[in-house]
Image 1 (tube, one colour):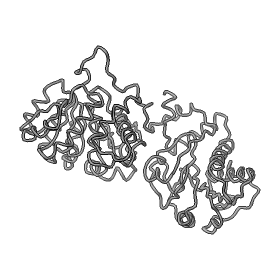
Image 2 (cartoon, one colour):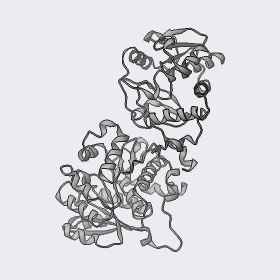
Image 3 (cartoon, one colour):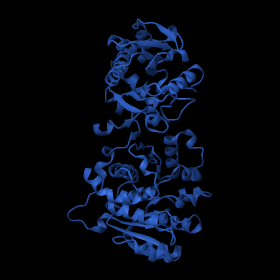
Image 4 (cartoon, helix red, strand yellow):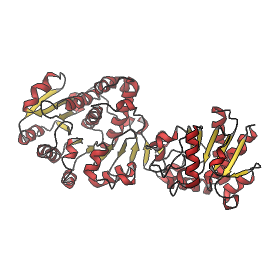
Length: 491
């Protein structure tokens, strides 16, 4: 794997433990890794703050060992430090015990009273390897930190956050900054963990980069490095049909807006031709709002199939504004039977709520599903999402054979082969009517140009977020497509 892609790798908690073990086996002692981790956190603290009293909270594992290093280094830097330990020093093992032995200051019992007088807290209690719920004295202390509004530096990840899912186990500390090591974990990017981490710093602690290849992770943070070389580009000797003919299927006279938003996005992202296909009574409404995008009417599913018979129309979006019911189901099955490259969103997914297997069995071509969490639950049930958003999207993609874009502020893109990406550039301004239709249109346009569904899902999601960031406040869905040329130029 290319080094540019390596740096966007995310490690599950078990994979990070394996990376530590591989480093130690390669000759990097665990106490060196711990010293380097503590040094990185201490450096970040002194760069940002000049606290009068720093409270370092240490847990019983390696995270607590990092805390002992941090306390020692801050003291050596001339700062006043108080250290509180969950448990007793005698229960520490290996490198953590060595680091505790190098701390010459007092060790208090970790209680809510430990916070007295502190104006900065270092959370080195549990880290990403948390195995149970945070409760009792730790929960009380976290609540007290929150109540007093004291800045908090998390070591690895805020205590209480599951490193694999981003979910809160009991309670979790709100960090101002989180310093993690070697690579981020999914819990740093999935909500609510992402919001609770504050600023995220990834520190090099001496783990060799070739460990990434040894571990073989299948999860990444979305970035153009992952898909830039596959992004379609016009060629000098090409023509519009070389760039695909995308079809955006709309609804009745009052429901053509979603299909039109998607169609314009598909055109902006490079599809050579785009046609909006709508019921006969909506054709004049759609045509009045479109110029470069063509319009075709259909009276019934049979006429829709006749439109699909044109082999040049190679990619189809169904769902936005289509209505839930028999006609939409028939149109989806027809597109899949014609083996069109498909994006299925909104009503196209909900229409199969009672018979999802009918949809899954029909998939024999490159297909993208773009559900929000409600649509996802209607199609797959809630059982998957109980395992966290990342695993839910993975399991769903493997079950149905389509790439899943499970939308939200922490959108997850998952392929049937187990690869997954978490997107992180979506600003809150995207929570506006029609923005999801634009995302579906971007994916449609990339599929029409031959991009594979997983890369198209990653690229469209990143482009969508980047356009919103570039436009800024006051964003409405129509602005996303108009901002797309500037985003594409930046690539």
